[in-house]
Length: 210
Image 1 (cartoon, rainbow, N blue to C red):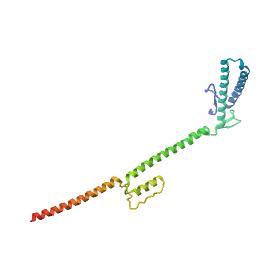
Image 2 (cartoon, one colour):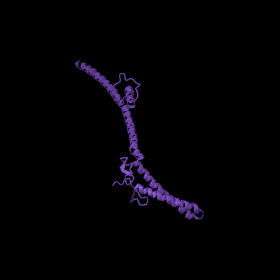
Image 3 (cartoon, rainbow, N blue to C red):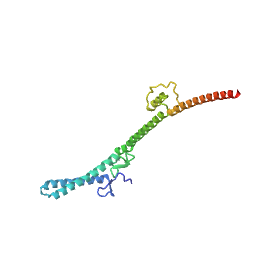
Image 4 (cartoon, rainbow, N blue to C red):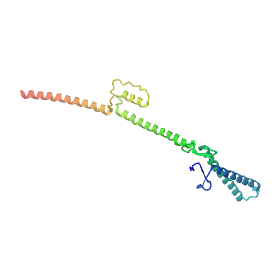
């Protein structure tokens, strides 16, 4: 037999009681507490301070036990369907397959979704930051500004306000453009040196032939 809907005894949790038994406990406890309150009211003037504390504590303890059983019954009634034919007064089949109440379901379903959304949002922000840095490092900010703005507009979902024109769509980087210019100058210098060498060789040849 499924014991999930049974209630643990207040004083001995290893013992399980039915909802009917719990209601009987509540009735007896209410009577006992009512008698205690009447007795306390009638004889309050004769109590010592210690006796007054003891009876007040007794009333509070009984009320705690009543609250415990009422809370358990309420939880079962919200979780399981009423069934007058059952010896327990309710069906052993839970109306909630997980056996949890609505608040617990929200913790299991809604909260993880919210946490997952936060996690994905953080991941997207980090990806955007990395791609933004890569775009800025791959393209030359002077000769390829239009390309950089176009990629950043696509990345952040806005329209580009810059014109690409004749700019190369291939990343050249600042270092690449600087190296290209340096190579061009070196080639120019080499070409001049080759021209000078040719002239010198020609003059030397003419001098030898004389």
